[in-house]
Length: 218
Image (cartoon, rainbow, N blue to C red; front, side):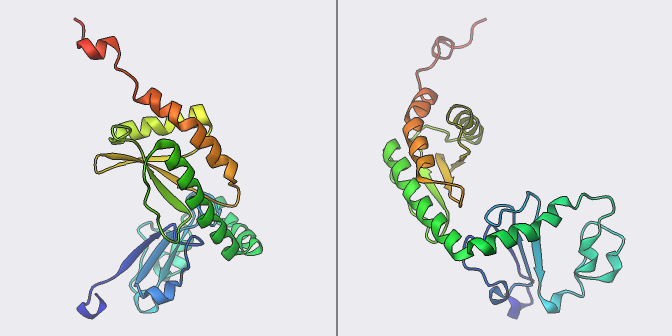
């Protein structure tokens, strides 16, 4: 794209600490990613890496007191914003460094794959492995959470009944669980999820109520 004069911006989302990442080697004009997931910083913390050739023209959308000083100073002062989360980021990265980012990454990838296997087996579905990621998708049985509203409701039910935070998504008319694994997770977390999900999903797919079978009254 660069040879065509196209500006390249990469949404790195949760790549930091989840996969091997060399931002400079990506070669984008702008690389943006979050630090609140795998890097354990508070929500709302992330980073913007700007290629040297693009910095002169880079300006933030939020105008601050140093807006005219260019990158990075223009990004650093937003008036009365709460900087608490940003100030926590160095401590989070220091903790990750002390744990060993390669060890953390390996633990997450292995545990996510293992958890995917036992949860899928409990549900009788066949998952597809996401390579080199500490996240895994488990297909739900057909007809379960296959729309976004149903997926949101099922996520709330799982959190309430199983005390588990699991992302439920609907894509292409099919529902999926998205499992993640970090240093605070253990195999027992996924075993408990696998043991409880069949009953929860069975209730979600239970027979229609009398009103639903006969139609609205009145």
